[in-house]
Each structure stands twice: as structure tokens, then as C-alpha cells.
Image (tube, rainbow, N blue to C red; front, side, top):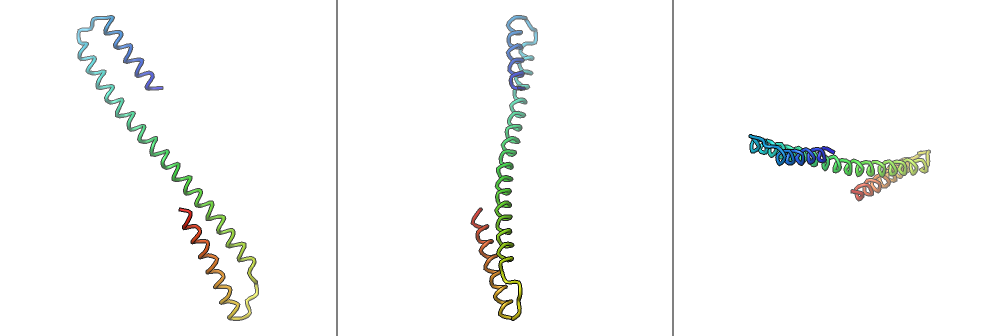
Length: 116
């Protein structure tokens, strides 16, 4: 929108210079050139900001995907924990329980590491 307005203003200025005699036309054209230069600098900065925003949005969606995957994995761990026997009566039962925990969490961590 601003580019359209700027371009129309430049065209109107050129048309005015051809229609009217202006004593300081060269100075006015120099000011117009400086304005154009500043405009290009601002437009480049806006484009850089927009690119950075797009990049951050894609990174955020990637992070959200990973968080969703982690949530699923944690639910799986919770489900498998609930399936394990609740009564631990002997030392062997507790060692078996710890081993299952380690295997389940290690598998989940390895699976998450491969999502990167």
C-alpha cells in the first residue's frame, strides 16, 4: 500500500516538473532521490523483520510438534506404568520394576531424540 502511494507521488512529481517550470528542480529531484534511498532502506528492514518472523513461526511450530510428541510419549510411559504389577513384595520385584522403568523411559527418550 505504501509502495503504491510512494510510486504515485514520484510519478506526480515528475509530471509536475514537466508541466511547471521549477527553479530548483535539480534540488527537488535530489530530495526525491534521497527519499527513495531512505524508502529502500526501510523496505529492506521490513522485509528482514518479516523473514525473521516467518522463520520464528516455523521454529515454533517445530517446537510445538516436539512438545506434542513428548506429551504422547509421556502418556505412553504413564500407561505402561499403570499396567505393571502394583504389589512389590520382594527385592526381585522391585529390581524388575526398576528395570522396566529404565527400559521404557530409555526407549521413549531415544524415540524423542530421533524426531529432531
